[in-house]
Amino acid sequence: MKIIKRQSCFTLIELLVVIAIIAILAAMLLPSLAKAKQMTYKTACQSNMRQIGLALSGYSNDCNSYMPPAGSPWSAIDENTSWMYKIWTYAGYRDDAYNCSRNCLRAHSKSANAFQCAVTRMSPGVGTPTGAPANVNRTSYGINTGLTDRWMWGTPINTRTVKRPSEASLVNESSFYLADYDGYWTTWGSTESMGLLPHEMTMNSLYFDLHVKNLNLFQISKDASNTFWTGK
Picture 1 (tube, one colour):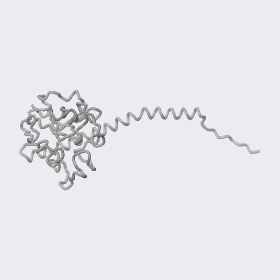
Picture 2 (cartoon, rainbow, N blue to C red):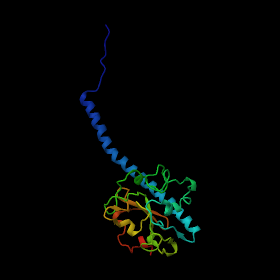
Picture 3 (cartoon, rainbow, N blue to C red):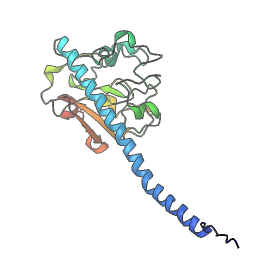
């Protein structure tokens, strides 16, 4: 007589327990994965800034200790007048590689480059210090022309005027070419803000001595005469 062995299988209760355990583990791991992803973006952004800092330093060495102005004339659409375009080749790119429809400085570019933070590039809803929507131009970085003087947006930055380089910001995260005190903190017409807080409501700042630091909103001075903005 042939004996038929019964195969063991999960009961419904056991299956539900397994599913519940998987769900709990997923709930525990997903925030950690999201945090790790944000950390990766923040680190990549800091790497961009270091590359930009070296490019600005190279430009300054070739231009009698001057760094480029934010843009002259000030224009929302003419990237060729911006400080970023002026250091494009210093950042390691060929001059003929620049094309605004393919590899430009703003977030609509089809190809990424060191002048674009991944968070700003992917999300138009990046946080700002004033709470207003980010400027529609959506660049990632602005230069602090306040190191020369306030409102001197079309004037090259005289590096000799910076007395405290380790405390002075040079490049900040901004949705326009400019990121001095007025450009960073002001809400333009109560509709747009240039300053950005893309990294979980923090921003990266490249200091004049070329070190990079991550700052939360309370660490970014609201005093226009602070060394962070003036270098003095």
